[in-house]
Image 1 (cartoon, rainbow, N blue to C red):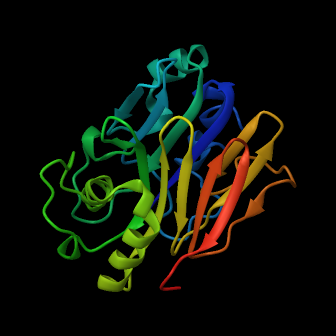
Image 2 (cartoon, rainbow, N blue to C red; image 1 turned 90 degrees about the vertical axis):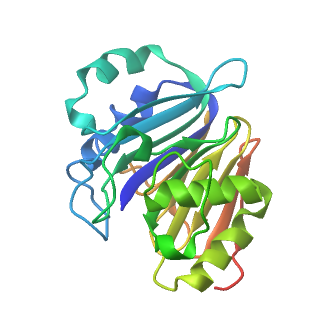
Length: 230
């Protein structure tokens, strides 16, 4: 129920990933091209990136991305080798607040969830940043560890067969992703790799990632593995 992307490579500005492309997250916030659930993503946005010391930094809002002139002004001056960003369409009954917008963080990882999951199948989490399903799911993934991301997604899907569990997570040198019920594409550029819910331009080099796969990006290599339970 959102659109998200991750970058790993040479330093780039969030503006180059989110605002400048003809169908970037800015445009996807009001006119996504491939979104199956919901028509727009106006219930918040967020971007996280790692500074030169490897510390995750975040900027999140409950307002639409298109209305944030401050971010549009500052984003071109920020640069990072690793970025996670998202625009949000809140599920019915979920809070609309900055802390409910991805990316979520445990201080080491940045994580975004594109999809929907029944909160009843998620255990209570002391460290969840909000009460929405994505924040609770993020807390569960952090608790179990990102090295078990595939197993955690498959287990949650077994408890909620209607769940959509597309995850993007990054720690500054590594990006992990899952496809479970929604779209994800990869663009291998000379300066790095982009993973995104949908292509931000019409470059023919974009590749669709099959559903129910685990994706790992590190050192410019992209490795895909089918998820158990698929």
